[in-house]
Length: 432
Image 1 (cartoon, rainbow, N blue to C red):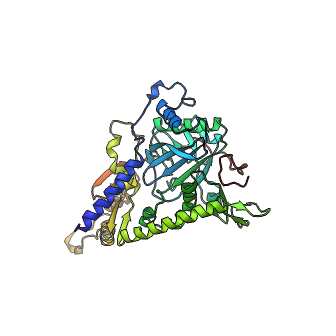
Image 2 (image 1 turned 45 degrees about the vertical axis):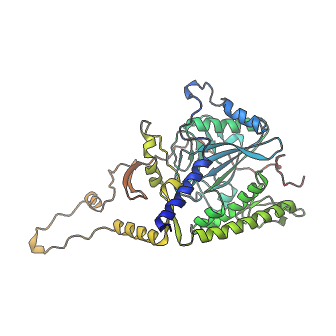
Image 3 (image 1 turned 180 degrees about the vertical axis):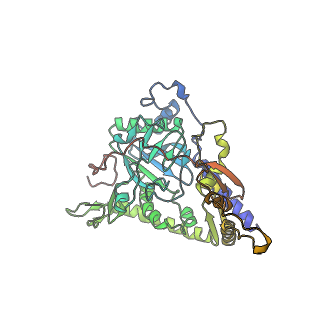
């Protein structure tokens, strides 16, 4: 029979394998083009390998696209409409850098990357970004604003350095930008960005069931489920400070301010039936996952611990290049006893050591320590400590010095939020 440690290693290995498979289309360094040969980055065509794949999947070159992000895996996917108006994944990229931890962005300066549903218009494209090319996420959207969340200039951009953004390599963002540009040329007015903490499978939901963001994740999972069932971007609205998806309005009602009560609405019968079937399968898988992870705790790593895992990737590159690694690489599944022991050790290590007690007559009266000296004695950074590095303990217990990128300058402001226009033609569950 396997020991507890062997079972934990086996589960962690399975998670890493799943991550590798989902990101197999691309890696951090899988540049398919020499950037020095690019004469016009804004109009650079998609590589021939992608064009060939679109033809194979019967995707018109300028058909609509959708973007999905999974933080934990560090993956950005581009989905594209086929001739039958259903979407299929056409490209998958390993995100080079994202800051913070799992969970939505709440306020300016929290270094969190957004989670939720966002609409990207042509006005969100920034061809003059200091980070090669950029696409503004549109944060804060109507949901964020209704819930008092703040922040600005949250991007998908190049340069592989993030402070609240999703940062790619320049080669990757060149392709992502081209996908959006071609879709807009084809008539798409709004590209949906779906940003999730992880793939919202039963196992992943159980693994993170104790996270304080769980209720928020259950809400966005509804939109995730709608896409899984239909393979079409859901129609997103906000009422009562919450997301609602693919809702048909009953009578003459309409959606008002995001904080207002939801109008009379319902899910189209065909979609409701499909979601019910999907939900039954999910519930069975959820109960199995509860049994599988009984007595287990997932340790989510800090950003610094993620950086430490991929520190070698920075060698030979500019200091601004700061990949962060994935949560699956740096985190681990532990027993409740192991997790408690680890947390107790960390808390004990963080406590200042008591001063030595001596008789007054045994030693001369020491001079009063300066503020800087006291901070050094307590192992806290003084005013002259470098702001660009931090010493952290990794999940494996090793100590590593890792870079912390500076806050991104205000390179591009998001366009004002406007009411969405009539549903695009590819929306499947509309009444028209």
